Image (cartoon, rainbow, N blue to C red):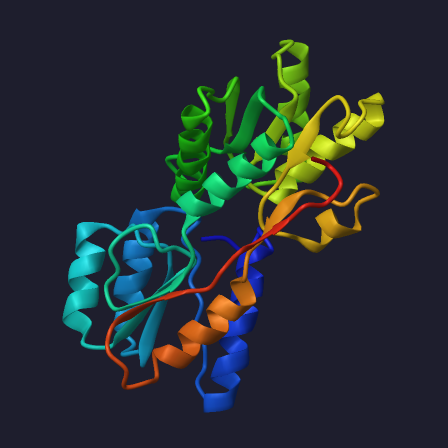
Length: 259
């Protein structure tokens, strides 16, 4: 989907680490989160007669699915388990990750929680996490007090600006759940610059477990995703003779110090 977000270079690191052992060469296409652009990339790559295809996510156009079914090669779909796969699926449930984040914040006493993330139409996995998060809130008789969907590539600048806008609007919140660590670190930077006590006045939770979050003056509460491992496993499985399968690689809640 992107090379701007370090999550996907990490995934590719796992893929190429395994491919290097088998003498295979990776050819990379970037969809920019567009399933239509993914369709064009798949058509182009299939014309080169690849040994296998690895795709991020489970959502594709109908034509992409038709091409994958007709290609007669192994296909692995990565980083998601919430949906139907074509052949091999390696990842974890984003809905369950969202549920786990909600439980984490609720167990610590937070009740007025806002959400900052990329627009749901572009980033379907973020949408699934937010949906799972809201399921747990509703079980507790709550819901998000505000939602900020952001356009463009994820960045700390966008996360900082989004939190600032929520504060300017005086949204009554004691915590903010961010769809990734880029946004969460930006929110943390804003609080540090404005003297807002974290987590005393506002708790912050991210997602992905990036190095910058762990190295922050206050280590970020987040979810560590096993993206390198997912890449390695997928690249191994597409060259096996095993039947179609779904493989779960667990995520880990990182308590940090911001929530």
